[in-house]
Length: 175
Image (tube, rainbow, N blue to C red; front, side):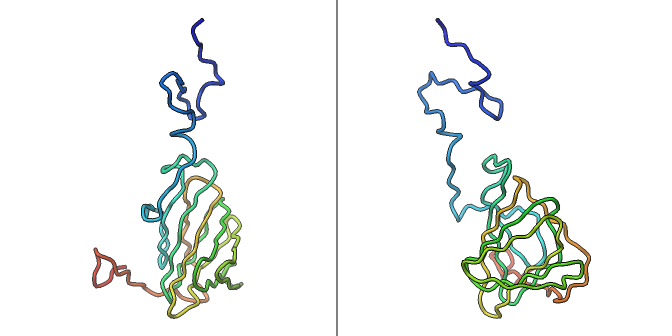
């Protein structure tokens, strides 16, 4: 009797798996490792902040999560923004983070290495590197496979400064 394909055999993304070719079922659709030096910087940006995607829909097919890194240079402040309907969790790896939030960014809290920060949907906020000489490095997770960043025209309590990013393409600094 020939093996018939049943709907239960179909992969969640629509293509069926034919197991006759000897490949294990989860070889290409199982655990994925994304090396830290292969993160994607093509992410909606906010001035003063360098975001990179590790896990998202485009890279690994994530439906309900976005994860990546955020770097904020010493003494730098981001513009005011929110992330639409997404929930965000920020884990501080290195440095000192100061968060401001509210309609006029009137509330503040600080976090250091090992601390977690939760940002609810639609909350206007600003990330600040509270250190004048140490880079702020964070890991960021969001509740959807797509990134959303809505930059806001709020007069922040702590004004963002123009940060010159020095990299191989902009050896003398670029915005």
